[in-house]
Image: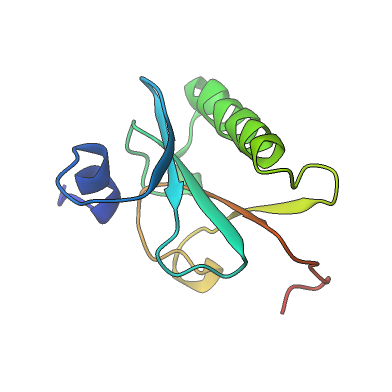
Length: 114
């Protein structure tokens, strides 16, 4: 499988503005932010899409959401609110085939998104 930009960021072969890292996860600022705060949370285990998840990945997804919650609190957007988004495949807006959670905040969001 060809390496994605996220694989290269994990390997520190591509620079990024990392705001969180542990043995299993990495979080960094999106280079094309859609909000004043736009952080990507990725597992270090490569899973191409949400469709590729299996039952053993439950903890991975849960960990991503908990990291997003902690980052939101550290950035003081937890009280006003924020948005968490997973994109899946081309029509879902996924451009990097390594699952990632978008943490968006710092502005008001409407529904439906637009």
